[in-house]
Length: 177
Image (tube, rainbow, N blue to C red; front, side, top):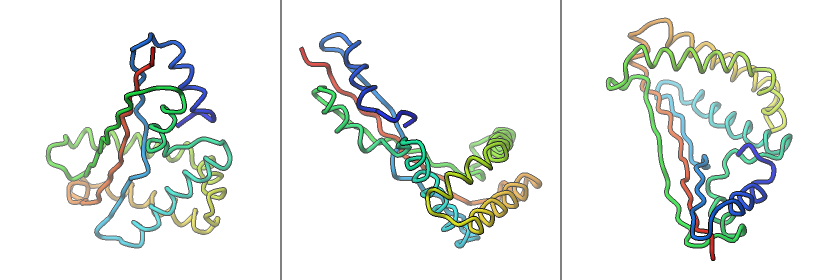
């Protein structure tokens, strides 16, 4: 996902692999979700922003952040055989009682710090991906307000039923003899 020439990288992986050996990659896929049951409008805005961000990175940097579905074809073009793929999914809720509150809060603080640090760069990607400055500002403000609200009160955090989900593709292939 961070490479502008993924086929070239996989060919190099094949080159350094012994005959009969496996090449394996795990990458994110197109399927992702966010839903806040208390704010349908924000849910739609967050999905639009994520799609624009991915498209902006593709446009400005030539990187495909949702490359998982493309891996089997890339592996085939690189000369691998016996290609297999699995979908790995991850879904999480901040309100999940199986997660320690301190872990959830640490994750939120980290994500929030990354958001603040990357804000200017992410605006560039979102603009390139088709969002207007006004829409981006609205999204950033709502994200900031939402994050601060759930971080400010443990009860709010434990009641937040917003769902986050993402898929990853685990793909393997064998170097032919």
